[in-house]
Length: 419
Image (cartoon, rainbow, N blue to C red; front, side):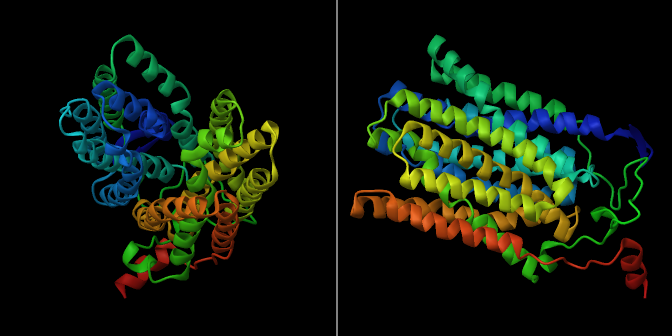
């Protein structure tokens, strides 16, 4: 249903569809091996020369998200999407132009440009969409995250097919240009929701609170002084422990147990299925039972994953672990935006979310190092998994203990400023 906003006819469902297409394109970074491994083979590079390109990209990605939230706040949905799309697309194209003699340039073209550009696009598009759905935050976020997380399921095979037919450079050029053009076209129709936005026809439940958009939003300069912010940062830093230990080790873990590599490929596919389904269904569930109960569901799924990994030796138990990890960790990506919006309001939520991601950024470097050290010293995964149990539980406690932040209603805040 359309509404007239600032003299323009705006359809929030149209903005949702544009955002989903943008996030679909941005999700291609979930399949790093589609580009990096073929590049190493194409040029004959040693694996050690580009071994950390993917993990370094994950370090820049949260910084891009932080910047995307800031740009969204200052310039709106259209500008931030266009900036992210151009940077992200340029990174893919320039990665295909890296000279054979300088593989280290991938740390600029792939790690920096793609990481930053994709983070800007992701945060800008998601929070722009979310601003138009204060009444259905979980559903909107769940859809965004499902499209973003699930895109690699068909984009990765498509990219692999193009590489087989031509070469990886053609794949990079094609992906960079196509993704940039699609995101730019969709980005031209993106528009940020106005402060205090209420959907047309919305009726507040007699026993329910007003929409989050009806309360004053906190900027990061105010949010970081609250307990809510630091608890969310702790949740985002500690909860992903099982994911950070296992995601790059799916195949290695199964082959170490003497399981056929074909099952490892199946495990990755099942992880992706669990990831998409978890993001969508548990994201929607936050509208019905609240984000804290859903967060506990995510924790329970990660605990089941850990138990299966620690005690299971059969293929079935390990595949169950991968499904639970995909659903449990994947759904947290739908919970965190709702968590941010609920505590601090929609106006600065993207920027605050970006700052909270800094905790995750640190852990993307710390946990793999600790994991490698413990596996090397002990010869097994037991110590790493015990650490993951502790950290994931600590993250869940942080998320559940976030107290309600009593923000003044917009009218009250305006009157207070006038006084």
